[in-house]
Length: 218
View 1 (cartoon, rainbow, N blue to C red):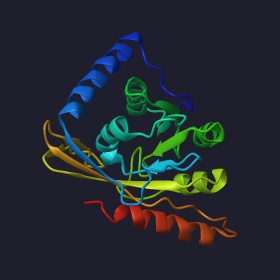
View 2 (cartoon, rainbow, N blue to C red):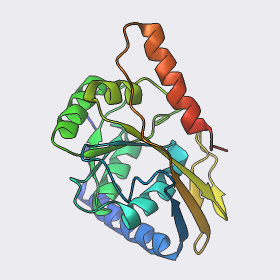
View 3 (cartoon, rainbow, N blue to C red):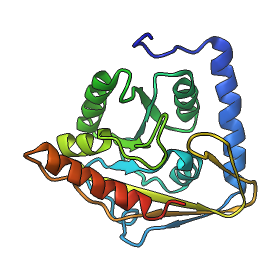
C-alpha cells in the first residue's frame, strides 16, 4: 500500500464544497450549547492546545468550533488519515475554516508527527480523534499522548451529547445530529502530560487520558 496520501480530483474537490455547505446549513439549525466550566473560552492560554475527542463526535465538535473558537488564535489543524475517507475529511475541513495534516499510526505516522510538531511550534491548535481512523472505538493509541508530551502543550478534552441523532453502522457508531436537534458540548479542564522515564510510565499517562475521554462517552 502506498505511503502517500490519496489526492483528490477536481470533481471530488467540487463535491467537498457542496458537502461543507450542507454541514453549514445543518449546523445553523442545531440548538447547540457549549459548557465551559473551567473557563477555557473566557481566558484561553497563550500557547497552543490539543483538542481531543472521539471519532464519532466529529460533527458536534466541528459545529461548536465554528461558533465559539476563540478569536485571536492561530487556527485549528485537524489530523486526518491518508486514506480516501481522510481525504474527504481534509477537504471538507478546509471549507469549514480548518487546515489538515494527513497521517495515521499505520501510514505516514512519523511524517505526520513531524508536521504536527512544526505546526504546534508555529502556534496552531491541533484537533485529534485518538481512536481514528479505524478504531477500536474509544481506545486511545499513543499518538495523542506522545504529541502532547513532546510539544509540551496541554490537552483539552471535548465531550458531546446528542438529542435526536442518526448513528451509522460503522466501527465508531458515527453520529449525525438531526436538524433542529439539541447538541451539548462540554469542554473539560486542560491538562498536561509530564515527562516519563519508562514505557510503563508513558502507558500509565496514556490510560489516564483514555479514562478522561471515556468518562462521558456512551
